[in-house]
Every structure is written in C-alpha cells, then in structure tokens.
Length: 65
Image (tube, rainbow, N blue to C red; front, side):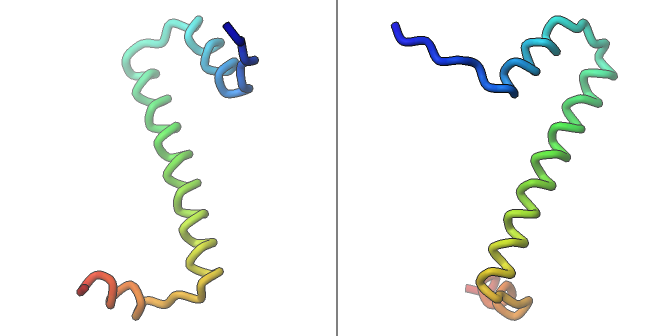
C-alpha cells in the first residue's frame, strides 16, 4: 500500500487531538475554524466578484430569476 505524507494541517490536528479540551474550549475551537473558513470563502467570492466586474444589480437579477 502506498503511503502519503501527512499535510501540515493533518499534523497540526493530530497534535490537537493529544490535548484534552473541555466542552467550552472545543466549542471555541470549532467557532474559530468556522470563522476562518467563512472568511476564506468571502475573500474568494469578493475576488471573483471583482474579477467579473459584478454589481449589486447583477445579484438582484440572479435573486429574481
């Protein structure tokens, strides 16, 4: 079987698994991760929006299709 090396994210998560978080800390971590990925998605959407020269009018038109 071919083994692939772990990514830096996988290594970091494995290190986190060795830490016993209480429920509040675990929820804080989940919230931080959710905010991180939400911000990343917004940045990419903004980039595409700018790249395609889209406007609020375009969005309104799509919403009403």
